Amino acid sequence: MPRPPAPPLMSLATLALLLGLLALVVASFYSLPLKWGELFSADALRSSAEFIGGFAPPELAAPFLLKIAHATLETLSMSALSTLIAVVFGVVLAVPASGRAGALLRAITRLLLNVLRSIPELVWASILLIAAGLGPFAGTLALAAHTSGVLGRLFADALENQPPAPEATLRINGVDAMSAFCYAALPQALPQMLSY
Image 1 (tube, rainbow, N blue to C red):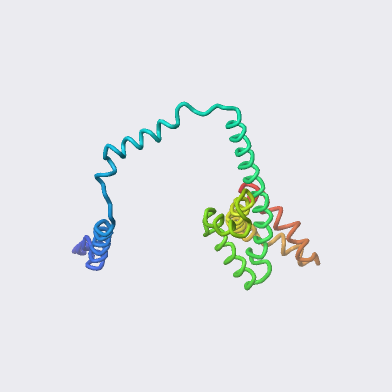
Image 2 (cartoon, helix red, strand yellow):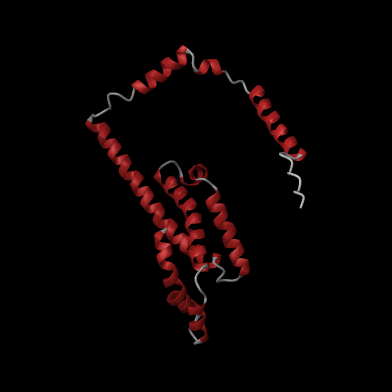
């Protein structure tokens, strides 16, 4: 039996795409005012050495250390509070996103979760800085907004992946939808949700 011919190493379309990308990279380097010589010049090396030298010896004055301790506590508080807010909103958004409130509400909440988690925290902070002002409140809200999207999606997937039989059994026996959810679906998904 004759062997089939070997496939070509690269199709013409693939070669054209690679050459086009290479041309774009070369054009990018040519169009930007990159000065590689200045990167390793004596002035650049001296400035870098001065910057790195500024780290030693470390500042150990009491007022500075108190300021650092206060900022550290503020950062930890922002993190804890934003996580708590994100868990609450994540659970609230996960229920309709898991498809328990109809297809339309599922699509809308999934879109909202995608928007929340696709915008980085720094962009959220920039947006919320205008509304909430400069300070830890804007940072807390920014962290909470992004994390709500992430946790909401994870929680929704955890709820959606639970076997429907226990909840359906309760519904057949006359239990209302909310009670069936709370006593059948949620206890099954809770260990996975807590792991996030």
